[in-house]
Length: 490
Image (tube, rainbow, N blue to C red; front, side):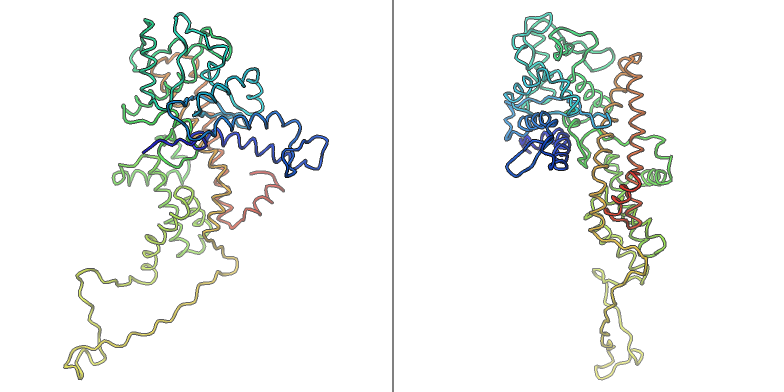
C-alpha cells in the first residue's frame, strides 16, 4: 500500500491540537464581536478576533501552512519527532511532523525569538532537529569533527535506514557507534547532545528528542522480543485511532481488580483468551466490551424492564468500543434471535437435509379422497402484533440516542487516549532506564509522572462513566449542559 502523502492526514495530531487553540480564539472573537475597541476584523464576513489574540492567530495560520502541504514528496520531506504539546492543564503528549524541506527551514527561521511565545500561547515546544535547521547553523560542524550536522530523517527512509545513514556519516569521521552495555541501544551521537535551541555546543546531560524517540522504539523492540514494530513516529501521531497501532497497551495489573466491572472484564478476558489468542490485548478488550455491553444490555432490556437503565448504559459502553452501527448489527444478528427463542419458544427453521415435518390431520392421519395421505390444514392467517408501546416513565432509546451519547463523550475519550499514549511512552522510558541506568535520577521524575497519569486516567474514566449514567437515565445532552451550567461540571 502506498504511504499517505497528504500533510493534513500525516500531521493530523498537531493540526488537531492547534485547531483547539484556533477555535478558542474564534469563539472569543464571536463573543466579543460587539466590542469594536478590543477586537479587530478578521475577514469580509464580519468575523472578528480579540486584538490580544492577533499574534497567536497569525502563528497558528503559519503552522497550518507548514503542515497542510500536499502532496508530500517523500525524498524532499523531513520526518521530525519530538514536538511536545501541552494542554490547558499542563499535561503533555508528543507529535511527529512531516514537512517539506523548504517549509521546515521557514518554520525554523520563523521560530527565532519566539520559543517562549509558542510555549506560553500555543503550548508547543519544538525539538532540536527543528532548531538545527536555522540558518545560523548552516555552516556548523558536529562538535569535535569536520562534518556537518546530519539532516533529519526523510520520509523516503525507514527508521532503520536513517540509523544506517547516521552510522555511515560518523564512521567516515572515525567515530563508531557505541552500545549501552548489555543492550542493543546505542549511545547518543555527538550532535544528539547539542541543544540547538541554545547553541551548537555539547550540553552536558542533554539528549535530543530524536534520540529519545529512538530509545523508545528500540526499547519497545526489546520488550516485544524483536517482533515487527511501527515507527516511533506513528506512535507519536496516534490520536484516538481506534486500532492496535500505537502505544496504547493493556497491561496486566491490579487496576483490573479494583472495581466489579474490572473484575468481570478481567475474568471474561481470561476465560476466552484461548479462543482469540491471535488478537492483541487492546483488540480483545474492545471486542469483549462490545459483546458484553451490547449483548448483555440487549438481553436485559428485552427480559428485565427494571434493569433497563443499567442495560442501556452497558450498550452505550459497548458502542464506545465497537461503534454504534456494529453494535446494533451484532445485537440484531446474534442476540435478538436467541432472546426471541428464549421468550417465545424456538422457531423451527428447516435445516439442510431435514425432512418436512408431518402435519397432523383431524381424522388422526387417515386419508380422505386422496387415498389416505395426510392433508395439512390450511395455514392460519397471521395477525400482526401491535408494536409495543413504552410504559409511562419507561426509558427508550434508538440509534440517534447512542450517536448523541458518543458525540457527547468524544472529547473525553480523545483525552483518555492521549493520556494513555503518554503513559505508555513514560512506561517505555522507565523500562529502558531500568535496563540501562537503574540509578538515573530521571527515574524518580518518570515514576512520579506515571502515578500522576494513572490518577488522571481514573478521573477520565469517572467523567466518562458519568456520561454513561446520564445516558442510561435518559438525560439528553441539553439537560446535561443545563445541569453543568447550574451545578458545575461533574
